[in-house]
Figure 1: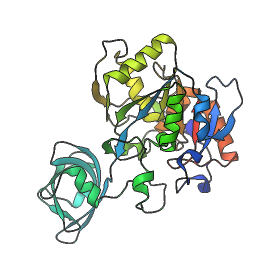
Figure 2 (figure 1 turned 180 degrees about the horizontal axis):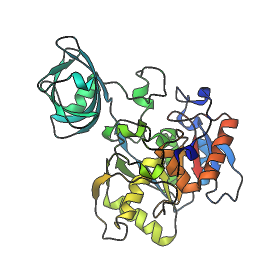
Figure 3 (figure 1 turned 60 degrees about the vertical axis):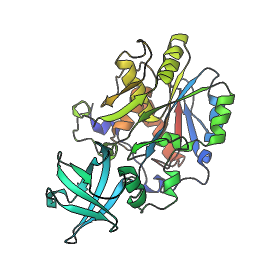
Figure 4 (figure 1 turned 90 degrees about the horizontal axis):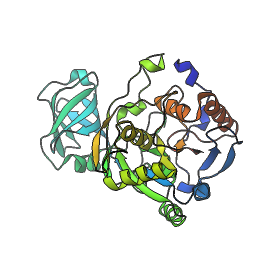
Length: 345
Protein backbone atom coordinates (compact mmCIF):
# COMPACT_ATOMS: atom_id res chain seq x y z
CA UNK A 1 0.00 0.00 0.00
CA UNK A 2 1.33 3.45 -0.92
CA UNK A 3 1.24 6.40 1.46
CA UNK A 4 -0.57 8.37 -1.25
CA UNK A 5 -3.58 6.15 -0.54
CA UNK A 6 -3.75 7.70 2.94
CA UNK A 7 -3.83 11.28 1.71
CA UNK A 8 -6.61 13.85 1.75
CA UNK A 9 -6.99 17.60 1.25
CA UNK A 10 -7.23 19.64 4.44
CA UNK A 11 -7.60 23.43 4.43
CA UNK A 12 -5.27 24.95 7.00
CA UNK A 13 -8.01 26.84 8.80
CA UNK A 14 -9.55 23.53 9.94
CA UNK A 15 -6.48 22.64 12.03
CA UNK A 16 -7.53 23.47 15.59
CA UNK A 17 -5.10 25.82 17.30
CA UNK A 18 -7.05 26.12 20.57
CA UNK A 19 -9.30 23.75 22.52
CA UNK A 20 -13.06 24.36 22.60
CA UNK A 21 -14.45 26.36 25.50
CA UNK A 22 -15.85 23.17 27.07
CA UNK A 23 -14.32 19.73 26.63
CA UNK A 24 -17.61 18.01 25.76
CA UNK A 25 -18.63 20.73 23.27
CA UNK A 26 -16.52 19.16 20.51
CA UNK A 27 -18.41 17.82 17.53
CA UNK A 28 -18.74 14.06 17.06
CA UNK A 29 -19.08 12.25 13.74
CA UNK A 30 -20.76 8.87 14.28
CA UNK A 31 -20.19 6.16 11.68
CA UNK A 32 -20.90 2.46 11.36
CA UNK A 33 -17.91 0.21 10.90
CA UNK A 34 -19.65 -1.75 8.15
CA UNK A 35 -20.76 1.40 6.33
CA UNK A 36 -24.39 0.30 6.44
CA UNK A 37 -25.67 3.54 7.96
CA UNK A 38 -25.19 7.16 6.99
CA UNK A 39 -22.96 9.21 9.25
CA UNK A 40 -24.59 11.12 12.09
CA UNK A 41 -23.33 14.53 13.17
CA UNK A 42 -23.74 15.38 16.84
CA UNK A 43 -21.73 16.67 19.80
CA UNK A 44 -19.50 14.80 22.19
CA UNK A 45 -21.82 15.18 25.16
CA UNK A 46 -24.17 12.74 23.40
CA UNK A 47 -21.61 9.93 23.64
CA UNK A 48 -23.45 8.17 26.52
CA UNK A 49 -26.41 7.67 24.16
CA UNK A 50 -24.13 5.75 21.77
CA UNK A 51 -22.76 3.38 24.39
CA UNK A 52 -24.49 0.27 25.74
CA UNK A 53 -24.81 -1.18 29.20
CA UNK A 54 -22.10 -3.82 29.44
CA UNK A 55 -19.67 -2.06 27.12
CA UNK A 56 -16.10 -1.84 28.42
CA UNK A 57 -14.75 1.66 27.73
CA UNK A 58 -10.94 1.76 27.91
CA UNK A 59 -9.09 5.03 28.56
CA UNK A 60 -5.38 5.80 28.50
CA UNK A 61 -4.47 7.44 31.81
CA UNK A 62 -0.96 8.52 30.78
CA UNK A 63 0.00 12.05 31.80
CA UNK A 64 1.72 14.47 29.42
CA UNK A 65 4.86 15.96 30.91
CA UNK A 66 6.15 19.49 30.08
CA UNK A 67 8.70 17.77 27.89
CA UNK A 68 10.22 20.70 25.98
CA UNK A 69 13.12 21.92 28.07
CA UNK A 70 15.21 24.97 27.04
CA UNK A 71 18.80 24.65 28.26
CA UNK A 72 21.94 26.74 27.93
CA UNK A 73 25.62 25.79 27.94
CA UNK A 74 28.05 28.10 29.75
CA UNK A 75 29.37 29.40 26.40
CA UNK A 76 25.87 30.61 25.53
CA UNK A 77 24.83 27.73 23.24
CA UNK A 78 21.06 27.28 23.46
CA UNK A 79 19.88 23.69 23.41
CA UNK A 80 16.28 22.50 23.17
CA UNK A 81 15.68 19.12 24.76
CA UNK A 82 12.56 17.02 24.24
CA UNK A 83 12.17 14.44 26.99
CA UNK A 84 11.46 10.90 25.75
CA UNK A 85 11.70 8.53 28.72
CA UNK A 86 13.46 7.96 32.02
CA UNK A 87 16.27 5.44 32.47
CA UNK A 88 16.47 5.75 36.26
CA UNK A 89 15.95 8.42 38.93
CA UNK A 90 18.67 10.70 37.51
CA UNK A 91 19.12 9.77 33.84
CA UNK A 92 16.73 10.27 30.95
CA UNK A 93 16.66 9.94 27.17
CA UNK A 94 15.74 12.97 25.09
CA UNK A 95 15.89 14.42 21.61
CA UNK A 96 18.22 17.41 21.51
CA UNK A 97 18.89 20.26 19.13
CA UNK A 98 21.65 20.92 18.06
CA UNK A 99 22.80 17.42 19.04
CA UNK A 100 25.94 17.52 16.89
CA UNK A 101 27.37 20.40 18.95
CA UNK A 102 27.15 18.57 22.29
CA UNK A 103 30.06 16.68 23.82
CA UNK A 104 30.20 14.21 26.69
CA UNK A 105 30.59 16.09 29.94
CA UNK A 106 28.86 19.28 28.76
CA UNK A 107 26.84 20.89 31.56
CA UNK A 108 23.60 22.63 30.61
CA UNK A 109 21.42 24.73 32.88
CA UNK A 110 17.71 25.53 32.99
CA UNK A 111 16.96 29.08 34.17
CA UNK A 112 20.20 29.00 36.15
CA UNK A 113 18.46 26.68 38.61
CA UNK A 114 19.13 23.05 37.76
CA UNK A 115 22.04 21.52 35.88
CA UNK A 116 21.84 18.69 33.36
CA UNK A 117 24.85 16.82 32.06
CA UNK A 118 25.16 15.48 28.51
CA UNK A 119 26.24 11.84 28.79
CA UNK A 120 26.28 10.39 25.27
CA UNK A 121 24.43 10.06 22.00
CA UNK A 122 21.98 7.16 21.82
CA UNK A 123 21.00 7.18 18.16
CA UNK A 124 20.34 9.55 15.30
CA UNK A 125 18.14 11.88 17.35
CA UNK A 126 18.37 10.61 20.93
CA UNK A 127 20.86 11.29 23.68
CA UNK A 128 21.26 10.42 27.36
CA UNK A 129 21.23 13.21 29.93
CA UNK A 130 21.75 13.14 33.69
CA UNK A 131 20.60 15.48 36.42
CA UNK A 132 23.65 17.04 38.07
CA UNK A 133 21.76 19.18 40.55
CA UNK A 134 18.21 19.91 41.55
CA UNK A 135 15.19 17.72 42.13
CA UNK A 136 13.90 14.61 40.36
CA UNK A 137 13.35 14.50 36.60
CA UNK A 138 9.59 15.09 36.52
CA UNK A 139 9.78 17.90 39.11
CA UNK A 140 12.50 19.53 37.02
CA UNK A 141 10.32 19.31 33.91
CA UNK A 142 7.30 20.65 35.80
CA UNK A 143 9.32 23.64 36.95
CA UNK A 144 11.22 24.47 33.76
CA UNK A 145 9.62 22.60 30.85
CA UNK A 146 6.97 23.59 28.33
CA UNK A 147 4.02 21.55 27.14
CA UNK A 148 4.98 19.74 23.91
CA UNK A 149 2.28 21.06 21.62
CA UNK A 150 2.36 19.41 18.18
CA UNK A 151 4.19 21.27 15.40
CA UNK A 152 0.95 22.01 13.53
CA UNK A 153 -0.11 24.30 16.38
CA UNK A 154 1.64 27.44 15.27
CA UNK A 155 1.92 29.10 18.65
CA UNK A 156 3.88 28.77 21.89
CA UNK A 157 2.32 26.87 24.76
CA UNK A 158 0.46 28.82 27.44
CA UNK A 159 -0.34 28.07 31.10
CA UNK A 160 -3.83 27.00 29.98
CA UNK A 161 -2.30 24.15 27.95
CA UNK A 162 -1.05 22.58 31.17
CA UNK A 163 -4.66 21.73 31.90
CA UNK A 164 -6.29 21.43 28.46
CA UNK A 165 -3.55 19.38 26.74
CA UNK A 166 -4.18 16.78 29.44
CA UNK A 167 -7.07 14.41 30.04
CA UNK A 168 -9.06 14.76 33.26
CA UNK A 169 -8.12 11.16 34.12
CA UNK A 170 -4.35 11.55 33.49
CA UNK A 171 -2.34 9.98 36.31
CA UNK A 172 1.06 8.49 35.37
CA UNK A 173 3.60 10.91 33.85
CA UNK A 174 5.54 9.88 30.79
CA UNK A 175 3.94 11.06 27.53
CA UNK A 176 5.13 13.77 25.17
CA UNK A 177 1.76 13.92 23.41
CA UNK A 178 -1.78 13.70 24.72
CA UNK A 179 -4.02 10.71 23.97
CA UNK A 180 -6.24 13.23 22.22
CA UNK A 181 -9.50 11.26 22.01
CA UNK A 182 -9.57 11.45 25.81
CA UNK A 183 -9.41 15.25 25.86
CA UNK A 184 -13.17 15.48 25.19
CA UNK A 185 -14.21 13.87 28.50
CA UNK A 186 -14.94 15.72 31.70
CA UNK A 187 -15.79 14.26 35.10
CA UNK A 188 -19.54 14.76 34.68
CA UNK A 189 -19.61 12.93 31.34
CA UNK A 190 -17.67 10.00 32.79
CA UNK A 191 -20.21 9.77 35.62
CA UNK A 192 -23.07 9.70 33.10
CA UNK A 193 -21.32 6.92 31.21
CA UNK A 194 -20.84 4.85 34.37
CA UNK A 195 -24.44 5.46 35.38
CA UNK A 196 -25.52 4.01 32.03
CA UNK A 197 -23.95 0.68 32.97
CA UNK A 198 -20.70 1.07 31.04
CA UNK A 199 -17.61 -0.47 32.65
CA UNK A 200 -14.93 2.25 32.51
CA UNK A 201 -11.35 0.93 32.68
CA UNK A 202 -7.90 2.42 32.19
CA UNK A 203 -4.48 1.39 30.95
CA UNK A 204 -1.24 3.28 30.31
CA UNK A 205 0.58 3.78 27.04
CA UNK A 206 3.18 6.54 27.15
CA UNK A 207 3.15 8.37 23.83
CA UNK A 208 6.61 9.05 22.41
CA UNK A 209 7.79 11.80 20.06
CA UNK A 210 7.64 9.39 17.13
CA UNK A 211 3.93 10.13 16.95
CA UNK A 212 4.80 13.48 15.32
CA UNK A 213 7.30 12.02 12.87
CA UNK A 214 6.25 11.40 9.25
CA UNK A 215 6.50 7.88 7.89
CA UNK A 216 9.81 7.50 6.06
CA UNK A 217 8.91 5.12 3.24
CA UNK A 218 6.34 5.47 0.46
CA UNK A 219 5.40 1.80 0.84
CA UNK A 220 3.36 1.66 4.05
CA UNK A 221 4.51 -1.84 4.99
CA UNK A 222 8.18 -0.76 4.93
CA UNK A 223 7.70 1.62 7.84
CA UNK A 224 8.27 0.80 11.49
CA UNK A 225 7.03 2.52 14.63
CA UNK A 226 9.10 3.49 17.66
CA UNK A 227 8.49 1.29 20.69
CA UNK A 228 6.33 2.81 23.43
CA UNK A 229 5.92 1.49 26.98
CA UNK A 230 2.53 0.34 28.22
CA UNK A 231 0.96 -1.33 31.22
CA UNK A 232 -2.39 -2.91 31.98
CA UNK A 233 -3.52 -4.05 35.42
CA UNK A 234 -5.14 -7.44 36.01
CA UNK A 235 -8.60 -5.95 36.60
CA UNK A 236 -8.66 -4.18 33.23
CA UNK A 237 -7.34 -7.24 31.46
CA UNK A 238 -10.02 -9.38 33.14
CA UNK A 239 -12.78 -6.91 32.20
CA UNK A 240 -11.70 -6.91 28.55
CA UNK A 241 -11.32 -10.70 28.40
CA UNK A 242 -14.76 -11.25 29.96
CA UNK A 243 -16.36 -8.80 27.53
CA UNK A 244 -14.86 -10.64 24.57
CA UNK A 245 -16.10 -13.99 25.89
CA UNK A 246 -19.58 -12.60 26.58
CA UNK A 247 -19.95 -10.85 23.23
CA UNK A 248 -19.99 -7.39 24.78
CA UNK A 249 -18.20 -4.49 23.11
CA UNK A 250 -14.73 -3.25 23.97
CA UNK A 251 -14.64 0.47 23.14
CA UNK A 252 -11.15 1.94 22.78
CA UNK A 253 -10.72 5.66 23.46
CA UNK A 254 -8.02 6.61 21.00
CA UNK A 255 -5.38 4.96 18.89
CA UNK A 256 -3.05 4.58 21.90
CA UNK A 257 -5.55 2.50 23.87
CA UNK A 258 -6.23 0.53 20.69
CA UNK A 259 -2.56 -0.34 20.19
CA UNK A 260 -2.18 -1.44 23.81
CA UNK A 261 -5.34 -3.57 23.71
CA UNK A 262 -4.41 -5.17 20.40
CA UNK A 263 -0.87 -5.84 21.64
CA UNK A 264 -2.26 -7.66 24.68
CA UNK A 265 -4.61 -9.67 22.47
CA UNK A 266 -1.92 -10.52 19.91
CA UNK A 267 0.34 -11.85 22.67
CA UNK A 268 -2.39 -14.17 23.91
CA UNK A 269 -2.74 -12.46 27.29
CA UNK A 270 -6.54 -12.21 27.06
CA UNK A 271 -6.68 -16.01 27.10
CA UNK A 272 -4.11 -16.47 29.87
CA UNK A 273 -4.48 -16.28 33.65
CA UNK A 274 -5.18 -12.59 34.42
CA UNK A 275 -2.18 -10.69 35.73
CA UNK A 276 -0.72 -7.23 35.41
CA UNK A 277 1.13 -6.80 32.13
CA UNK A 278 3.97 -4.38 31.45
CA UNK A 279 5.99 -4.07 28.27
CA UNK A 280 6.70 -2.18 25.10
CA UNK A 281 4.85 -2.19 21.81
CA UNK A 282 5.83 -1.15 18.31
CA UNK A 283 2.67 -2.65 16.83
CA UNK A 284 1.88 -0.98 13.50
CA UNK A 285 -1.83 -1.41 12.77
CA UNK A 286 -2.54 -0.84 9.10
CA UNK A 287 -5.19 -1.96 6.57
CA UNK A 288 -5.57 -5.72 6.62
CA UNK A 289 -4.88 -6.02 10.35
CA UNK A 290 -7.20 -8.53 12.10
CA UNK A 291 -8.59 -6.77 15.19
CA UNK A 292 -8.83 -9.15 18.14
CA UNK A 293 -9.82 -6.88 21.04
CA UNK A 294 -11.40 -3.60 19.90
CA UNK A 295 -15.02 -3.53 18.72
CA UNK A 296 -15.63 0.23 18.65
CA UNK A 297 -13.23 3.14 18.29
CA UNK A 298 -13.41 6.71 19.50
CA UNK A 299 -10.73 8.82 17.85
CA UNK A 300 -9.82 12.30 16.66
CA UNK A 301 -9.11 13.21 13.03
CA UNK A 302 -5.50 12.46 12.11
CA UNK A 303 -2.78 13.77 9.83
CA UNK A 304 -2.71 12.61 6.20
CA UNK A 305 -0.17 9.87 5.40
CA UNK A 306 0.25 8.98 9.07
CA UNK A 307 0.34 5.75 11.07
CA UNK A 308 -2.65 6.97 13.09
CA UNK A 309 -4.78 7.40 9.98
CA UNK A 310 -3.60 3.96 8.83
CA UNK A 311 -4.98 2.49 12.06
CA UNK A 312 -8.40 4.08 11.53
CA UNK A 313 -8.42 2.86 7.92
CA UNK A 314 -7.59 -0.63 9.17
CA UNK A 315 -10.57 -0.48 11.53
CA UNK A 316 -13.20 1.00 9.21
CA UNK A 317 -11.79 0.45 5.72
CA UNK A 318 -9.62 2.84 3.74
CA UNK A 319 -12.18 4.12 1.25
CA UNK A 320 -14.99 4.55 3.84
CA UNK A 321 -12.64 6.30 6.26
CA UNK A 322 -11.38 8.77 3.67
CA UNK A 323 -14.98 9.41 2.58
CA UNK A 324 -15.81 10.29 6.20
CA UNK A 325 -12.78 12.59 6.31
CA UNK A 326 -13.95 14.36 3.15
CA UNK A 327 -17.39 14.77 4.70
CA UNK A 328 -15.82 16.17 7.87
CA UNK A 329 -13.83 18.66 5.79
CA UNK A 330 -16.93 19.71 3.89
CA UNK A 331 -18.78 20.28 7.18
CA UNK A 332 -15.77 22.12 8.61
CA UNK A 333 -14.98 19.86 11.53
CA UNK A 334 -11.88 20.84 13.54
CA UNK A 335 -8.90 18.55 12.99
CA UNK A 336 -6.05 17.05 15.03
CA UNK A 337 -5.22 17.28 18.73
CA UNK A 338 -7.58 20.06 19.85
CA UNK A 339 -10.13 19.14 17.17
CA UNK A 340 -13.32 17.10 16.96
CA UNK A 341 -13.84 13.34 17.18
CA UNK A 342 -15.28 10.28 15.45
CA UNK A 343 -17.09 7.29 16.94
CA UNK A 344 -16.96 4.17 14.77
CA UNK A 345 -18.91 1.08 15.83
